Length: 218
Length: 221
Image (cartoon, rainbow over all chains, first blue to last red; front, side, top):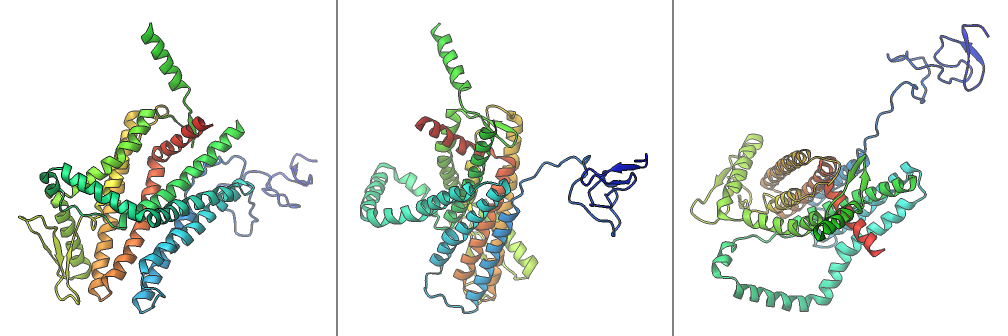
């Protein structure tokens, strides 16, 4: 072995010292030059050892793309409806509600959890956890209110009437007049708050996984 | 003697509280902070909503209506006008001439997303700061940043929602359909925008909720 030759770390063959890649196996021999390599030069996926590893930023690209797709679907459906596409039921809002709360977000959560698990090399714990989350969301947001309303609607109405009557009697007319024009919000804020709650649950679940990982590594 | 004993007990109690380590930061909250956040913030949200509905705050609706009318005329040349009732408790309206339907739209508290602003302001103002890991000044600065960016972003999003709503309605699309559609779209974008901003600049909101869960979980166990 002359002074102009070195041994490849992978295939152990002798190669010229000034080469960047091994001519036998293509392994990177020394850090690549900072300027862009010529087009006919082979590229390697191994980063140069002197390059500092950048901190991984957690930009939720998949989530953003997912919501963009949902928005696109929203526009397409609106366009179809505007052009005479008739739904099987007159309650357009209810169908939308079902679509958003049950189908779209369940799929989104599953996708996010799957990506989370696969990026960590986990064994499906994310799917299991996400199943609980979806169950909780569907149960809390849709199931429980429906059951409560259907069972306790009569009782709730009478209690509500009694409370409002008591409040009306207790509070003076001046206070009632002050907020007489207050507009009671309809369904609009609930959608925003529901989405906010779901996204918060996803973030907190990610925190949970991180703390679990930290405690395991400790 | 008794005071010293109590203070020692208190110090021990504070030191024994769990510390969360997330994203190279440490978080620790006291019970009073968590209680304030979870009990007072809903009350504050409702109070802000009621406050926004008072007559003295009608300038907000008038300003928003004028801004919407200006942008409608600028972008689509609709010759819209704002109708303001200075002596009555009636919300301002936007009038669009040559309209296929009614052409008069009242801009109410829900139209300007008053409920969402109440929620955002009430939540952000009472987010607890961590006892360790960050200074008070830096935390307050982050709060102000999130407050300004989120409110202005959602204000603009809502303004453009109303602009497109009025324009499409003017073009002949039924109000209910375009209202529902644009409302769903803006709610999704707004919620996503708010959550991303919060996670980036004010993660204490989510961490404090998770911290409460950990506290309850440890007590139950």
